[in-house]
Figure 1 (cartoon, rainbow, N blue to C red):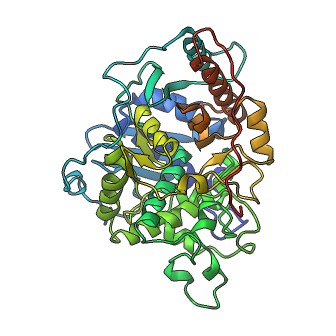
Figure 2: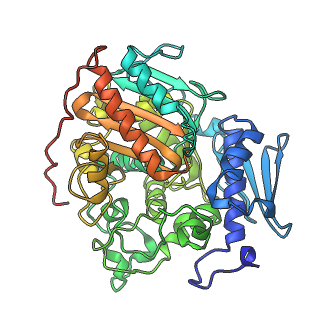
Figure 3: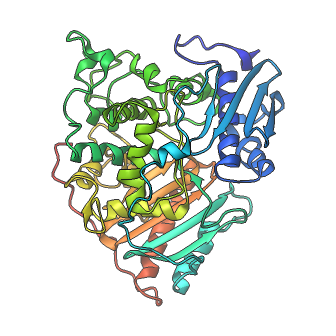
Length: 476
């Protein structure tokens, strides 16, 4: 039976059935016990209506145990994955392993309260649109057109010149709902790396400090953290841009959904092409970077959680963040960071302000310019952990044509999770939802950005053309 087959394309590919049960268990567990969403709604919207499982839902059964705070999924009653919730750490697919490096919330928060450097961006209540133009922009972002794929927008937060000027939430979501950033998490991994660079603990252009690659005759020895962050490491790590059941044969899916030691598995990959010569968007690259971060701040799960809280989340006023990990205590650097929509917007503000919060430099000088500088071999418009609109790549040109300014850049996750930063407009837009039509999701966020820019220039809708920033001075 195809569902239970083992892929023959690579000995490192996973069993589709195991990857599928891992996905279902982990997503439902996190959405129910981290986000606090209704399990029935989660099952329908995120699993049953997910095109990746179209025609296959009959093969899976799932059980949510609220008392034990865990989710078990079975494929045809033969293959099983159990995901368990851990306070402060979110959910973990056990896959036969125990949580050997799982600090408690009290251990993570042992440093006590962290002074917030970023000023308040709104009061405790939902901020109504400041003018009719903003209201219309939100109306369009949430509207469902008859006969068109569903947007399923859950939240939009618009920050202009340091204050929220409009926000809206779908039923079941609100100011305090932690939402999944999916691959927008990669941009947070970027920020943690930047902090290490500022502290003098890492150099992005030096050979990556990966023990498995240290032999001088190992061709992987030359791979740098910069190349890992830019998805041009050359490692045979699959491709994470696909989202269908066929991708369950992909190495990248196995790393995220079934491997207890994600970085260890990714580090064992062979070199497919010379580093720096090919762009392949693969979750194994940030998995390796997450291990480097963990090792550079102490080597244990509690160390990296404290580091993220002390150096990034705390100063930005991000209090509801859950940075999920694998069984070794290493953050899932490619996905599975949960934070409220307002907190995701606050993260975007750090990059809007050139890495400075409340007068204190969080990211090293020049890091934002580096992050948004074009990766030459990327054909879809990619920088260093951020999607960019500078340059002549196919993706950058398309987004500009859809109304997104050339100087804007995005933290972007599957199903339309987006944090857009527009420096020329002093604007951050955070949008979250479950939009399965990926092209439509990009078109929608481009339209929301263009409509918002038009609206913030005045209630009369007077429009100023998108500002084009010069390409940062970079060899990439």
